[in-house]
Structure formats: structure tokens, C-alpha cells
Amino acid sequence: MSTAVQELMSSPPVTCAADTTLSEATSLMDRRQIGSVVVTERDAVVGILTERDLLRASATDVDPHAESVRRWMTADPDVLGVDDEVDAAWSGLTHHHYRHLPVVDHGDLVGVVSMRDLLTVAQIRPAGESGADVPRGLEGVVVAETSVGDVRGREGFYHYRQYSAVDLAATRSFEDVWVLLFDGALPDRERSEAFVREVAALRSLPPVLADLLPAVASVGSPLDALRTAVSLLGAESGWPAGLDIDADERRAQALRLCAVVPTILTAVHRLRHGLAPVPPRPDLPFAANYLWMLTGEEGSPAHVRAVEQYLILTIDHGFNASTFTARVIASTGADLAAAIVGAVGALSGPLHGGAPSRALAMLDDIGSPDRAEAWIRDAVMRGDRIMGFGHRVYKGDDPRSLFLRGVARGLGGDLVDFAEQVERTTVDVLADLKPGRELYTNVEFFAGVVMHTCGIPRDMFTPTFACSRTIGWAAHVMEQAANNRLIRPAARYVGPPPPQPVPAP
Ligand SMILES: CC(C)(COP(=O)(O)OP(=O)(O)OC[C@H]1O[C@@H](n2cnc3c(N)ncnc32)[C@H](O)[C@@H]1OP(=O)(O)O)[C@@H](O)C(=O)NCCC(=O)NCCS
Image (cartoon, rainbow, N blue to C red; front, top):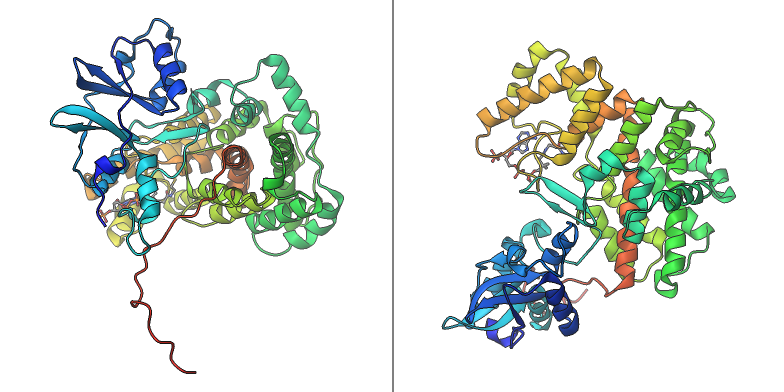
């Protein structure tokens, strides 16, 4: 079945002039319950203004009552013809990351088509006729709306709410960013201090978990233990199905869970090494308490801040596999623990949780700067991947890597100098042997260097990442629950054609 764009577009389209102010455009979109408005001049389409543009503008200090939409709209947008096939519209929207496209007929604007309209068509197509060809691995496909944050790979930029994640790491505390993700706004000083106290009081292990943790820790990896422990926490706390609780209860559960995850992981680490767990210190903020529970010693202010900045940088990162997993589980109305257990499972896969420890192992193996070039060349010629380089989304500098390189420099030390030499050599060798692939340093490379320098053992690199990312997952679970619809996609059946007679046994 082929469907033309005119069968599903919203018509007539809502329009405004280019000199309309941002606040007028906002109230127009609110009133009409739409996510975009087409900007016209003398009946010709000159731009499209979307909710995302309004969000970008609101993050600046422009006056929405004076600023016109002209500067914020996408000028000269791609347009569709009324007779275009839905598949063409789908590919335009997914490939270019558009969410809305104007539809024209002989040059006249007649409608707007949105990603949501296309998904509706995908759902009403008969089974066997997929709504569209979706790239393998869902690369670039928009599957949800979020205001938690986003990644703009081409620009080398990512953000939490309306703030650059890197700016937040440079200027705010981990707890402040936690509040931002959970509540949507940064706290003032008083609120921040109250929040630090509130979550510090939630860190202790529940007795059942404390009793069972030695057995849990004795088998598998720290992330295996975390998966089991979060499941126990949910069951022991008697958390009802997510569908049956309100936003306040969900937030209270999320605070408890995020506060206790570092206690679980550090206790698991110590038990695995024959050491007694170190109880949490309510007088220490998140990062300082983490190092305390891990080592039994107070970290130096420089180490605490470096770890805190790493944690801020990794709290969320767009619609990655574990975040998507958490949202799918939350969409079924399951409880928070179920969603986080699933997310930890996704994170534990080597293609996702990655292994900053592998980048460090490579540095060990290279051994000295003079061996770097030959080592890297040999590895690439053999077809190996150089750990800590390349990224699916970033095709230039990974902003997390740039920031962590600065953090590592601030900490100083031989390892940092060596890592920088190897980084330069690797980028050059990759440019030479893999021209045009745009391979640069990713977050893993300097993450390992920073964590190692701050005294975090290698087997705790990915668990440390999990401590911060749990907060991102929980923010997404809350967002999903607040405006839920069961996430239930379709697959294209490619097996033998049915129905065939069932052979006799
Ligand atoms: C992160 C990663 C999986 C992204 O991969 P991707 O976007 O799917 O890229 P592709 O697998 O399509 O690779 C494109 C090309 O670049 C090469 N390439 C990508 N990353 C490379 C690396 N780290 N070392 C050497 N070559 C690399 C591939 O070999 C391929 O070359 P080809 O065109 O000759 O076949 C990949 O860059 C990688 O494996 N990096 C190393 C592991 C790592 O650091 N992971 C942590 C990520 S945060």
C-alpha cells in the first residue's frame, strides 16, 4: 500500500509572518496544540519554526516579546509535494533529523507533515507492509520526544535541558545537575544545600540487601551484582507497578535508588576484594562520598572535583541503548527497579558501557611514546579498533573527551603526558590509514586516564559510569511515565511465507 503525503498531512497549516515575535509564536503553537508553525512571506514558505527552536531561544537572554521568529526559524526548509510518497517524507525527516516538513502544491503551501503523522501511517499499514525502511540499529530514527537532553553530533555538542553539559561540568556540582535532570531547573544555593542533605540521608543499604550483598558480590562482575541488587531493592522496598503510583512517589523512589547505587557498587567492590564495606558519610557530597566508600579515605579536593566532573559529563547522553531500554520498560507500567535493571543490563554490553579500561590497557601495552606509532599502525593494519577513538554520533571532537583532557591535564602526571602523546599519534595514524573516516578521541580515552589518576580501580570504571547514568535513566523513566504510551514497535517478517500446513508430529 502506498500512501501520498496529502492523505496524512495536517491541513490547513498554521502560519505566521517572519516578524512575528517569539512569544506570539509560542502562544499560537500552544493554542493550536502544534509543534511547529510555517513562516510565510507573501504566501511563500520562507521558514519553519519548531518547539526545538523556541527551546533554543529560551536558553538565551533574548526578549521573546521583542525578538522575531526570523532569526530562530529554519530558513528555506525542505518541502514535500502533495503527491510525494510517505516513504520519501519519512526518509527526509529521519535522515536530516527534521520533525516537520511543509507540504506544497504547485508552489502553494497546503499542509504540514510531522514525524507523528508518519508514525500513524506506519501503525495502520497491514502487517507485512512496514511503514518505512528503518536503518539497521535504528540509527538516527526519532522514537520519542524528550526534554531531558540531546546530542548534536555534527556540532560536537550535547546538553542537559537547555544547558551545555560541558558548561555544567565546569561550573556546577553533581547534585545541582541531578536536580536539573529531575526537576527541570537548576537549584539556587539554598535549594542545592537542602538537596545535598536530602539525598545524603538516603544512601544506606536496606538490611535485607546488606545481608545478601556478600553472596551477590561473590559471583560475577560488579555490574552483574548491581543488576541483582537493584532488583532486590525494588522487591524489598515493595515498589508497586509504575502505572499505579503518582509522580511524587516515583520521584521519591528515584531519589532513593540513585542515592543507594554508589553504596551498592562500592560495597560490592570491597567485598570482592575481601574488604569490609565502608558505610556512607552523610556529611560528604556525592563524589566525595563515592571515593570515601570506595577507598576508605577522603579523596584530595582535586581528585574529588575531577571525579565529580566526570560524573556530570556522563549523567545522560541522548537516546542511547540503555536509556531507550529503561524507557521501553517504564512504558509497560513496570516498576522503577525493573526499568533500571534492564538499563544496567544494556549498559553491561561491551558495545555500550564500553571499556575505558581497554584504552588504559592499550597505553600499558604501548609502554613508551617511541613505540606508539608502530603499535598503532600495526593494530590498524591488522584491522583492530583503537580503543577510545571513533564515535557513532560525533564525527569531530567528542566534547566529553576535550573536557576530560583538560581535567587530566589539571591533575598532571606521567600517565597524562603519555596519554596525550599517544592521542596525537593515534589521530595522525588514523587520518593516514583511514582517510575520510573522521576518527577522533572519544570519551573513553581520557575517562580511563582521569579515573585511574584519581585512584579508581579499573574494574570500577564502568560501574562509576553507572552511578551517574542511573540518574539519567531515572529522569527518562519519570518523563516517560508522565506522558506514557506503551512502546511497541513492529518487525518486518522475513521467514518462510505463512500460513503453511503444520506437519504431523
Ligand atoms: C565507537 C565505534 C563503535 C563507532 O563505530 P561506527 O560509527 O559504527 O563506525 P564504523 O564501524 O562504521 O567504522 C567506520 C570506519 O572507521 C574505522 N574505525 C572506526 N573506529 C575505529 C577505531 N577506533 N580504530 C580504527 N578504526 C576505526 C572502521 O574500521 C571503519 O573503517 P572502514 O571504512 O575501512 O571499514 C567505533 O569507532 C569503535 O569501535 N571505536 C573503538 C571502541 C571505543 O572506543 N568505544 C567507545 C565509544 S564511546
